[in-house]
Length: 147
Image (cartoon, rainbow, N blue to C red; front, top):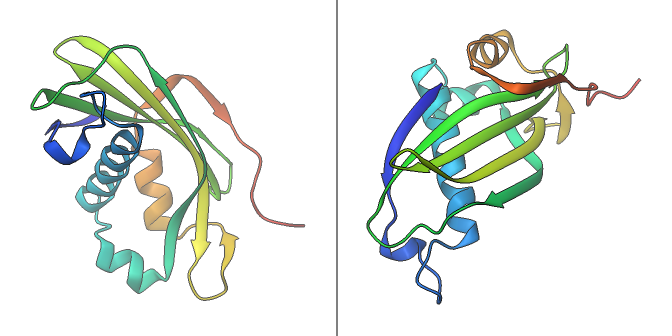
């Protein structure tokens, strides 16, 4: 599984002194883009290809609080993909030490940035998706393409 360690910073906290919900989404997105960058797809390559990921649904499950300045290990797995690669489900797991503290599951697709419609991704993106570890509940998804 692709993983990085982050720190729960001041800007990640909410009024209750624990990590706010949108901070989980931000760290999940950062880790995903780090994965793609390390697989030959930095942001400049997405711009050259004129394709970008678009999330259509996020689900966050919380198991324990994360507090200021705690180290937060975040992992990324592929929880589903359509045969043409046009739709994906990504799973991010969050740990403090060995304790699972949260899980983010995001479903999305690939957006043609010029036509503004969902498309099957170029081969380089397909190869990166294929290189992701798969979750235990991995499932084939329907295509996002019409027709």
